[in-house]
Image (tube, rainbow, N blue to C red; front, side):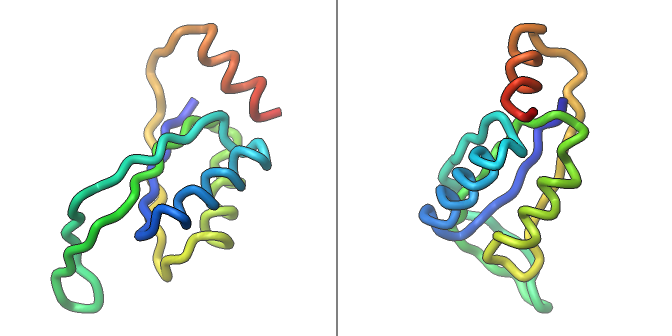
Length: 102
C-alpha cells in the first residue's frame, strides 16, 4: 500500500480531482487539507500561495494509473505526485484499500 500526495491551488479543483480518482477506483480514499501557505520555486523565483493537499491511499499496483490521472486532470503544468510505501497498517484497513481499488 502507498500514501501519495499532490497539491492543487483551488478547493474546487481538489474536490473534482479527488472525486474522479475515487470514482475510477484508482485510490481508496483521499483527504483534502487546506494549506495556508506553500513556499516554492517556480520559473526562477520564490512563490507563496495557499493550496490544498490531497493525501491518497492506494495499492502500490495503482500508482501508474494515479500518475496518468494526475497528469491528465491536474490543473498545474508540473503537478506534484509523490508516494511513500506503508510499512505497516491494520490488515482490515489494508484489505479495505485493496477491495476499493479492484
